[in-house]
Length: 389
Image (cartoon, rainbow, N blue to C red; front, top):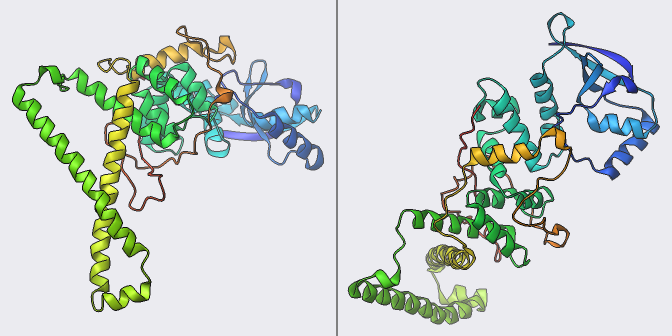
């Protein structure tokens, strides 16, 4: 594919109806327009030849800002296929996606819909080939595709930055009823993103357990099984109560003068420090398990239908995309179940860190080696999604 440069009239250029990015911040456009007035356009837009003139391939922000600057012409890089023929719609779309993914912040659902479009419309496309095309990991692509299974109101919360993508991926694996239940609980404002990850993960495990008939109701247990459960419960509570006594001992050591400790432990300081490290490691693991238990308890209270089947990600993605047909403009997808929630009042979630190597959705979130304060960061990612090409 070759190209040439030219100065084009603004009225010759048409916006791409398949532009993967829909949201453009007005303040940022005004700032760019002022920069263009002062310094000119530093980088040409990218266009392709079409019957009606030229169509934008990349640089819609620059194009819009140039309009705001009241310029009647713009510098453009014109893409050409072999023999200066028109480049294909898919080539144009992929170039637009690549620029937005790698040079500007796209909304998570915009990325998801872009990946889905390539998978649906490009012959032989797979999550792996899409990942390679856009220099992303396969896991990143699958994470984004999983978001298409979210209820529309949760998708809106994700795009607004109220719910992080890691938590959203876990929520997407739930049934629609349980997605709604966890979202309603989140709107109370007392749970952060990390807690959402753990609760959604716990809900998913409970959904699976109910489906596999592995959850035994107490009323269905034999007298022997009930007695065994009672003994186990009593032992667990007794063990945890005993920790309270250890706390006083540790608190005393924590308040001791270091020089006095060194004299008291003459020749054994290193040995005792290793001993304390082992205790700290066990306490950390026990604390993490209790946090998981809390998530399961919260999930049990939130659950609407434990036995509900998780959504078919492919079918749900298709349904969402159908609502986002270009003919419908930029309207938010509608839900028939309830009116869109007022997300402005929702709590802002902590920024979620995207990683290249996170465990699958059904792998228990892990605690880090050295958590700080009450925050244990949990990693969670989507299972690979089988999306029809």
